[in-house]
Length: 70
Image (tube, rainbow, N blue to C red; front, side, top):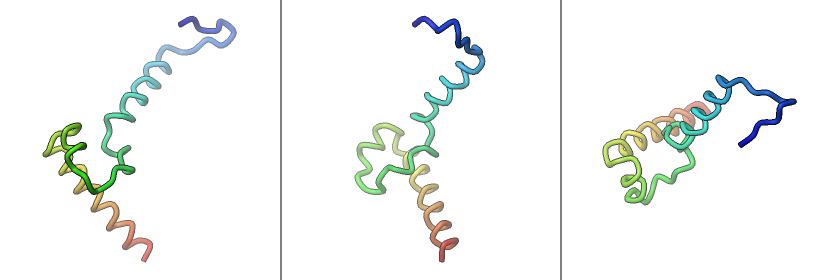
């Protein structure tokens, strides 16, 4: 893909953008939209133990937010 010469980009910025893009798909912190039901699909993606840990962390965050909001 050719870059527009009038808009040169910094290769370090490109690396950071690519890393952020990849991490958005791999990071459990970005998976808050995942339902707490129907575990089989997500256990296959994250592994049983990894998904259990992620789900536990999310449940704790939800409880903390409920306490904060009253």
